[in-house]
Length: 314
Image (cartoon, rainbow, N blue to C red; front, top):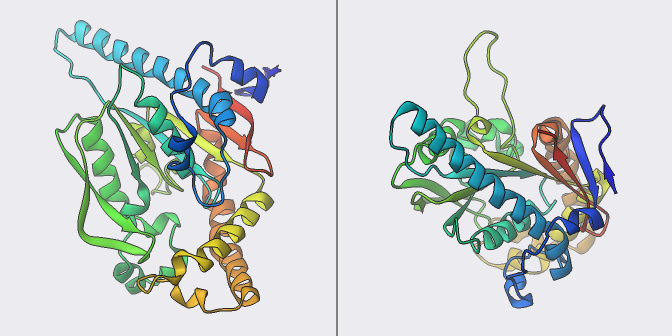
């Protein structure tokens, strides 16, 4: 069923209707492939990849081709040669909603289309200020909020990618040490497609009235918001925290090692505080308000599976 209410800027698809838009696109991933792409405590099935992500990859493949044709038409009009311009896809959403898994699946699928085999994936975690800077500014308890990012560096990165620079570098963030890794960089070498994944990629900021501004989202060709009921995202976050407490947090190098030594009740209470004061608050105040700016919204149900797709009308 398709909802095309004239009062809405969206065309809404239920899962069966969206699935049919896959047309004859083959499924190139195996269960073993999917095992390497799933996030912690996420249970994305091959059926969901076929129903949701294959149609999306087909749509994006068509959009990439159309955008390249548009660049060539502009070059023809200006009587100037035009180089192939990287197509930038943004993936936004809350902590624990599954945007990283969505990004990895899209990267795997899009790289198998012959027209754009080179698909890079970068997360905005690398553009967080180092902990030393956050501590000096009193922002450690607001990590993930817009002010905790080096927005100027992120802007330069996407601008250089979109300008067709031969190589562009991005900082590397470690979830183990909870900090930027000094001296480590990701090199992005003129990909066909760049997927940029992060909490606040669709934000516009708050500048002074009348002051010209450039936003990261100005460089996007397509944007996706991974959505779910707040209560479900909170539950997924708490479940992931408990899993990490029993696994990765036990590593001696982990910033969160102290949580592995707590009782289950103590750790749960602490995780609930983090959700209430940081992640949940950031979702409500900064992330969720950007959902309406996306080109496509993947709406998940309580079981983490995508139930509906909302595509912005052209």
